[in-house]
Amino acid sequence: MGAMNEVIMGLYEIEEQAGRIMEKAAKKKQELTESSKKQREDSVTELERELEGRLTILRSQLEAQTEEELEEIVKKNQEQITQLNERCERYLDQIAEKIVEKITEV
Image (cartoon, rainbow, N blue to C red; front, side, top):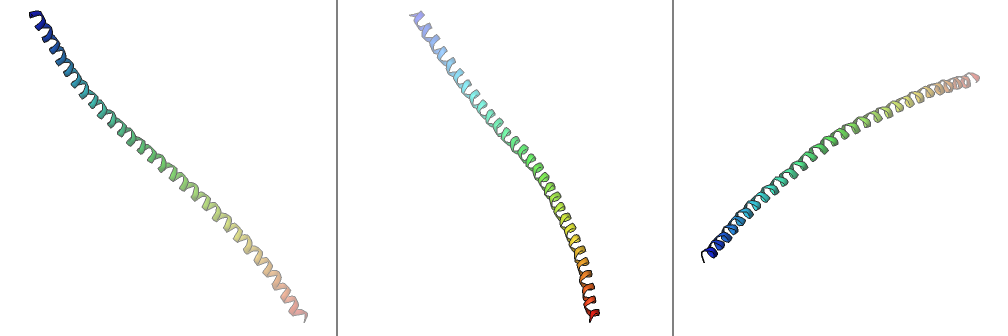
């Protein structure tokens, strides 16, 4: 019976050790889960910062491009206005001459 008791005690010890190992494994798993969760959150935060930076760059590029296009449009409009003014002055001179001619014919 002594040998049987030793075997039973050995089984109890193995069971206790297995229990402790399982507890350690569960704690380690929880730590890893929390660690990976934090890593995921950090990755998401980093990605958000990177996207925000890229959006800022794109926004400033778009604003610069829009400004250039607006300046180009204003420049073209000013050129067209200048041309129209020049034409009007020429036509007004011609009209004034014709009026003078009509008046002097009489």
